View (cartoon, rainbow, N blue to C red):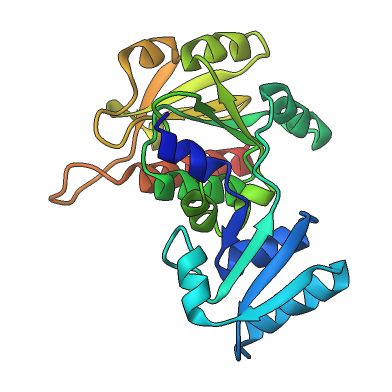
Length: 253
């Protein structure tokens, strides 16, 4: 991991209206809130109300100060100082499924490098009811301010675990009864593939896809049928389409 990435990942700043509001609603400890002086929009007023309920210190500041503090360049007039993100354990994700009395549904993200893609996939995980997300410790985006903002607050609800080796983690999860579907353009179409039961959806790197070693650990490959002129979907878009096909099949079961 690059030094600048580590600095971002340990940052205690959360930016943007939705991520900050969801942090309050999820019960996160917000030490201090910085609001653009003069803001009167509804979402901002909701954030201020939540902050006052929790006794958070609020500072109304000029745009120039927010711009200097911002690490994403898209603070929307709101920056919160919160505790650094705490990663979950894989066992926490399985426990999440058990607590809901549901078959485990996990995203395995193999070397996703773009924090915006990572954030979007965490957002999808929350919306489709997945129990958690697993990413590798190396050669992967982490929960940076950009990823947190792209998740629209979903990082406050979805457990994200970092592991040393994705392939080994898949082997361990197979012992827990999960099977794994790898997103690949040459796989069988999602409509012709049984995606029910305890499942891990494996999404690969934006450019090279799922690595050969990880793909070899998967039980099957699955694809999104496409008819356009472009040869593939963005990684986060493909993740969303496949995830909601899993949801559809589970509902039909």
